[in-house]
Image 1 (cartoon, protein in one colour):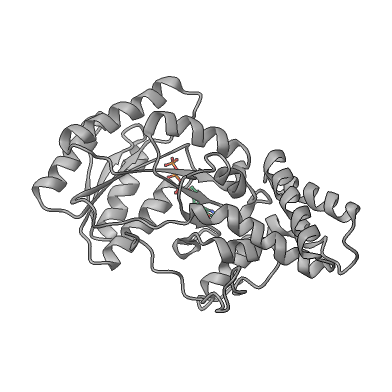
Image 2 (cartoon, rainbow, N blue to C red):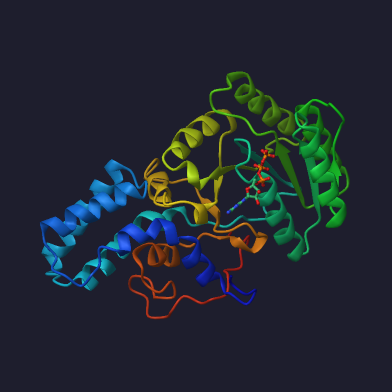
Length: 330
Ligand SMILES: Nc1nc2c(ncn2[C@@H]2O[C@H](COP(=O)(O)OP(=O)(O)OP(=O)(O)O)[C@@H](O)[C@H]2O)c(=O)[nH]1
């Protein structure tokens, strides 16, 4: 439907269509009264923002309306956007690729969340930055996953370390050791999909972590959870469980295009309000280029129905249609 020239801002806007529709539908140009604000709160809850977070947003919005004497729905929409930006901004982050060599990244998540797609995106991004990458096929559970990764590695000229029927802890140990010996820049360790309720498999993650630390003290340096945005509020349980087992450093949230539950990003940032888990990428479609950097302002713009290029709070320069150069943060 959309050509390849579609910029990242329009991909973002189109991808969030289903989440935004209930929120945007309220802004009809009518009066700002208690009914309107209640409906707005309900629309946020319907978008899986969560009851507490929605109520917090509404409280702040009511204060802004009173303090700044906001009258029109357009003014309120902008104030809502600003509140959303304030919540999301602390979760903006990119990976710092140069802080360790090799930088070891462990990928975790439930089955089908989009781990393989995300590894592809990361490897491509790193290769574009001139980095050498080694993949560890830590999903020894599923032969097909190992094969999928091997084929993919060959196509993209990225070496994959795997073991038939092997122990995932041993595979990642070998890969990190090899990465170290060969002066590789980045090692990405894939792991098998698992559910928070599978206690043994969750404990296995700690073992996989430890084996990386044995091969290179301090590894893994990044422990990234990939979650499927269509899971809505259930994502929060996944974040908690995987954080306990794998000490997360960041998140990738996929499939926001297939869901009305994209508001869950707001709930995620409220889990550790003082220092939310970084949201590294969001997926707004099936293609690799649909997995894009997360930026609070365009995301919030898209959610409330503003042009995603609208400048952020206090800014006067529009957002550009070029995806931010990721992976450069100090
Ligand atoms: N619509 C949409 N589909 C996506 C997105 N991200 C991934 N997918 C699709 O979701 C499916 C699962 O993605 P994978 O990357 O294979 O998931 P996985 O976590 O590696 O799966 P396991 O290996 O089973 O654990 C694939 O068909 C992807 O094309 C997204 O942002 N939007």
